[in-house]
Image 1 (cartoon, rainbow, N blue to C red):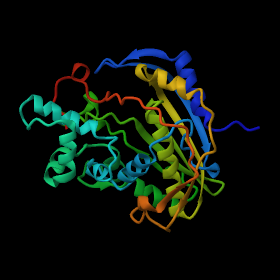
Image 2 (cartoon, rainbow, N blue to C red):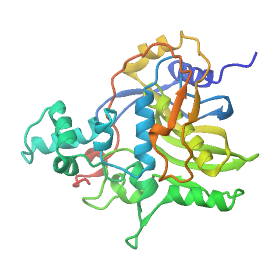
Image 3 (cartoon, one colour):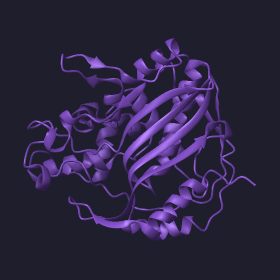
Image 4 (cartoon, rainbow, N blue to C red):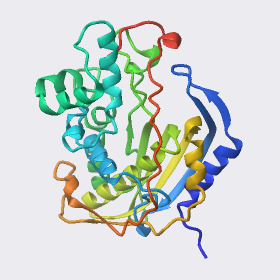
Length: 324
């Protein structure tokens, strides 16, 4: 009997627990246990690889992906759709300004209410500069243009199905770490930093390179998100989806997630759900999240764990500069 494809994820998490090297984040001191250089492959003709050994927050996956591929970088869209997976990042920036007396003191709950109900406040404090939506669809070119990488990829594959150059990068050294000019360094760490599309046997395949991967909380989102992206692009091109290949650099588990991971490893996977599109669309601009229908998703119960906000610009390592 063929092994359920979800065991790729479970076996990798087990390997990290057993063999991962303990490391400490230089910024906040969080402990991780990590491996370097692994890969998983999912045949999308067999369904969407939305993990079943715990419930994955599907609404968050769907709206976050639309937020990316529509080129947005302000969390207001997510907040308006009651998706709060990105709230911590702009609020972290806001609390730093609070400590300097530059803005009124607000709890996180009040901050998010202001993002939702005050467009001027959201514009001032809800933007996350130089992250995925901007870099996928509005990459800032040196001559003042913006470059629509993902839009170009779709049209290139439409014109040349044998193309080997259809790649989207979110890794822009101009805004990263000590490579950035004063005042331009982004605090948010770009983690899933590059993906390539390729047509094989008439089917649309996507490979993601993820330089840093939180196996317990982040990776289940990443698997579902990029697999769905491959399905969306296949639909735009009038083709079937092929494989999603997930390649990791540093893949790790946080010390405070180990107990939850061990609980997940006791569970048995169920069949993956199916995706159907309720309306046709032939461009990225025509796509809407409400066109996606998830069918037959029957996972085990949610396993909760705290998000650890780490990475990105670090004054101790990269020098004291103003950040974007």
